[in-house]
Image (cartoon, rainbow, N blue to C red):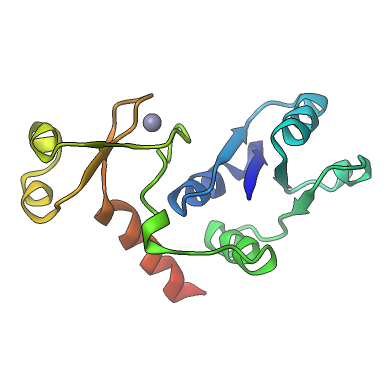
Length: 148
Ligand SMILES: [Zn+2]
């Protein structure tokens, strides 16, 4: 399942990427463009508004909660999303780009020493060059799961 989120849902977009879901954050007002992207890529639209449901063929899901963790809980439950540790380390939370593996020694100067010592695997976003390691995402997810 892939998503496109409207502009009031930026924090939720980051969370869906953490869970490994291909998620576009669409922060513009151009509704027709939004619809086109959703139809073209078969993306489910997540939005707080209700006005778009009249477009046929569009899968739209309305977020009613205000708090981002509750929003995520709503999406996970109602759309039956999988949360798996292996999938929580796949995408850049900022760019939505799939992360690529890098050799551990390439991360040495770019992560805190403690992280370098304790983590085995590192990945990089090819778009923004940010380094990720499993602990970053999975720790957040575990905390989220406790709140469900
Ligand atoms: Zn990135």
